[in-house]
Image (cartoon, rainbow, N blue to C red):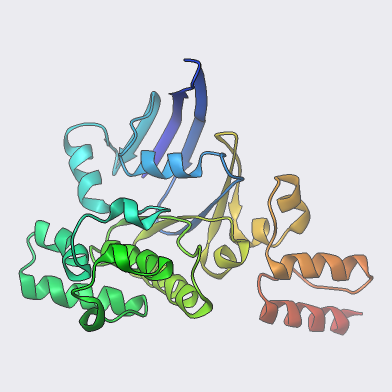
Amino acid sequence: MTLSNVCLAFEGEAGERIAALEDVSLELSGGVCGLMGQTGSGKTTLLEVMAGLLPPDSGRVLVDGADASRGEGERRLASSVGLVFQIPERQFFEATVEREVCCGLVARGASPGEARLSASEALGLMGLSLSELAERSPFALSGGQRRRVAIASVLALRPELLLLDEPTAGLDPSSRAACLAAVRAAAASGATVVMASHDANALAAVADRVVVLEGGRLTLDGPARAVLGDAALMRAHGLEASCAARAASALRRAGVRVEGAPLDATELARAIAAGRGRA
């Protein structure tokens, strides 16, 4: 997908136009792209533009070179994108978990048996059992379960472009780990993943690249290690770095030599050991 000079504004309460996205250009092709920014920076709006839910006021969204707003490009977008909303209930409309996860598959031509098998596999990736949840209402589940069912319903479709809005929010550690593993698996299978998150630790575990939005503008775009591993850079953009990056920064201020840009605890330990070896 290619976004070229995308702009979008909403009407405020007093009738004024409030810019949500300003001149955003972005090329997406494989891997996991982390999308960061403070609340109100435009992350959710950008995901909804990518998904075709919001048409830009100006600029273009291209899918395989075709304009996503019409004709072949619109059809390609509809068949290739999967969006998981920040609030899972907003995408539920079936009475049971089984019907919820299967509905998209059946709509695309899968037989009931094929749909149920794919639904079971997708729920399993998220640490859930179809046999246990099949007849339960998705609206009656816990917050964490609702989020995992929402993710599974999109993963089951195997989208070429997977858009995730704060997918790890509210998840316990084991569910969070399952979610991140599913993100890595989707990217390994060839999907392009865009994951909006405030959680630098989660993005450090999966992202290849990180882009930052500020006031609807794209202000930073770089390799995940160069962005997430630089605590000072993150602070300059009003964001909190990963725990490992913040610890490395604190250790350096205390006079400890830390090599490279560690993204997790294991890398931090190795970086400290490497620094001692060079001392």
